[in-house]
Image (cartoon, rainbow, N blue to C red; front, side, top):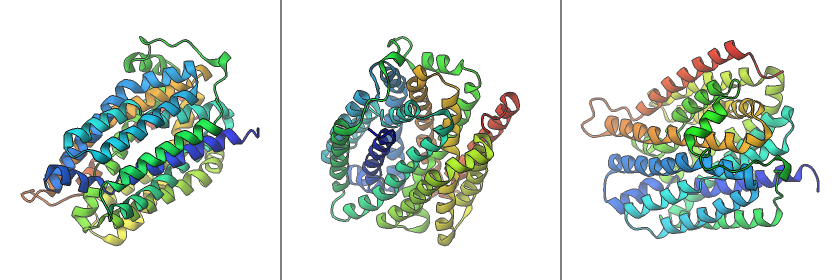
Length: 405
């Protein structure tokens, strides 16, 4: 088997999975209003509750999944997650109350192993000098899927608000079958370590990973970045409708522009840019661009500016694989699953707080009795989080130096 085939398999898996996830984004506001009978502001709050429920389960079980993949291998964990993801989408497709939708998101959070397990898989098969590039490919695959999914979902939603969920279930099922047939196991038996439930809880895993040299600061930057970046799935559809009157198809198109730009950036630029400037400068450059983007989204009233900022937000995503590569380089081979399990847990902790914070901020500034109509207020909040992350990363650089060429 060619040494490139394992990388191709995991990238294709993430691509198909991301298409399934992206399918439901444009239709979620309409579906929540359909089952609750509430307006857009209240629907946004329920959207935050659903996202927070998902994140709470991911926070609790992410380290368990990561530690299990260090013990039993990446393939069985990934396939199990895809199977339960397929069941979850089918469950949401037939749900007719908000409580059933919430139950579905809790199940999905319990099995949200795909991104962290795929990242551990990439670390298994990559040389140290290629990790940022390969993480870039992984994020690019997600970006392509994210770009395709909302467009397909927006079109399907014109026929029925449930259609995207059936389609997402089909994609997850096909993804599972594809992985079952063609994806090889990446973690050799001699590199596996015993599973300990005591160590697998989020706090013990964070202590084990955070004690590695230089990782605590990088994990803090990662958490702040996730806290800020979750503004997109939390309020983008609501923001675009309230501020500019976009319909589901137009919302899907803006997400397509963002996802396509992100995919091209991470597939084509990450490798050469990291080799030229090192991962630290690349991560800082992405953070600086995010500050510009979030400020623009928070204040603009121009439709044309939205399209420009959608492109720039995709370019700013260059920082994610650089930061991920820096963390992976500092982690032993037999703890890669634990590392990516704890990053999944940190991301979940951020999204427990972020959806409620972002949606409540949106609801407050977009309600009929708001003191000032400012649907972009959540993006101004994200500006502050990214700015703090930049300061922390700068301080980390002073203490540890650049981990790159």
